[in-house]
Image 1 (cartoon, rainbow, N blue to C red):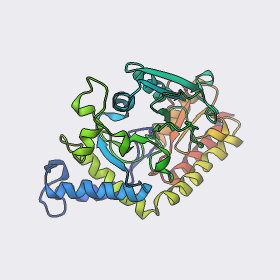
Image 2: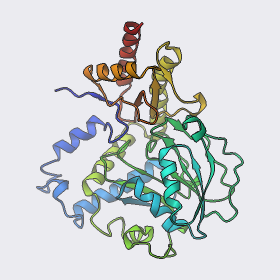
Image 3: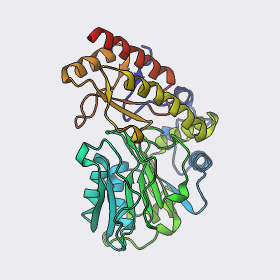
Image 4: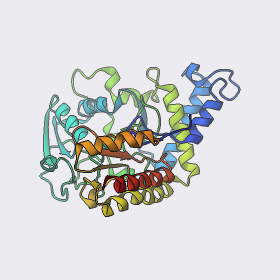
Length: 360
């Protein structure tokens, strides 16, 4: 069977070159006589893999020396608790609630202290990003939290909030490595890798060193302390070794594409193919305020639940899979991450044009 165009929000499409390379090394990784899946994480061969992965990620993102890179487990959802456990020294934090994942993070933080929702776009089903230029940031807030790209609702912070000097913590799961980023503007940024970087099971956290301390909330488990992972090079326990190996291959693939500047240029061009069609279509409409549109996740609807279901079914038969929208938005959603080729989006649009003509 030939490969489909996979528009899944995550786990999502990976670069074909990376999958082929991993397949070639599956039984014998570079003369070791074994797969990376079978390798001791304490071996020299594996240490070289994780070291190279970190070095390439630092190069890609221009990560300053005073930031630690941690490869963790537990999904982005585990960070919803780890962040307050490690960073909420005053037991106060401010959250900007722009979607389901920011909302879950905010709710989790309420278990550990005073988590204030200082802005929200819930009033319009999270279809826009609120103005964050002058928010009522708490004087004693330990950090300000955002989910930078909203996978479900298709919005993106194109301007970071004014945190009034407080560290910014950002969940970048669904826009990770899709564009250049100034890491120094964040106290911490993190994301699950299964959308844009690798297989599910790895979370990458990039944290400014001064925020990684012994001073955590009482009762914080050893495994949930950033300092433990930082002091042990992400190897306090067995890491998700194979997942990190694939992430490392994706970092190299991105460097070969020309890095994050080139990736952003490609992603802008690719998203324009779909958005330009949606803006001219008489059947399909995008659901997001134009200025806040994501380059990675594009939700759209026909206005008819029956027609939406028909479209998803026929699209799948034509080789365009995982287009069903999230239940809270309905309709469709095309996730067009780094590894989705522009041809995939062009062919999807051609299919949408045909569907529109036939539905008249």
